Length: 256
Image (cartoon, rainbow, N blue to C red; front, side, top):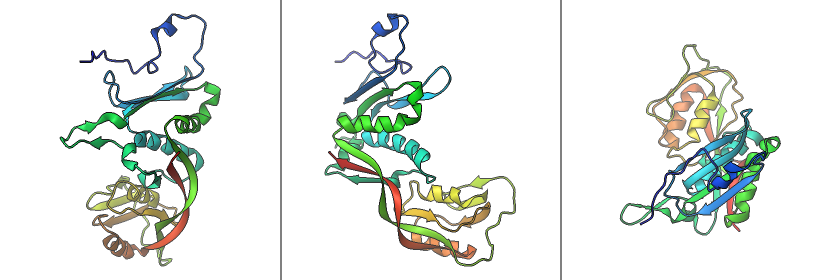
């Protein structure tokens, strides 16, 4: 049996204690990437920060590549696009997509063979490029190539069907219960609803807001389980969902 000695998440993965004994040195770059579970540390991750508080590194432990790609994609979208990033923005174009995710064995236990561990640290003056550097680094060694690119995608486009304003909020405390039942929006922008609809719901299409409505709204629907019901209830507010193709920024995962 393997002896487990709990690892300290505060230090870089597998960095030898020899480093701590050295004087007058500064860790400028560190990269560790391994496939397979490390029982000495839990599943998750943390940030690395400089003394000034700048994020200049990330650590991921015992996670499938999908989770790492999602975390990196979330940050890159925030830097490069005004659009929110969700799993719907990830296109998997690989022969064996199951290897990107955590799988269960027949006995119900987790198959840990597709878990990875990753640590990446760069100098503070390169911090703005951290997530692009991380993606490039994983691309070199993972067996996959991941890019952010514009792709034509079938979407559900939210539009207004009249100029009559049936949306304007009456004020009060901001509230959003999307995607729960009922789904309520109070004194919040339509972007809040769109972000929630692009999350983990039964409707697989990406929602795009083309209403041009910038103010906060009050809106309520019974739920978001299917397109036909959602569309019918949005029509009470002179809104509609139109199937259409749009060129959207996507994270594309391919085999090398």
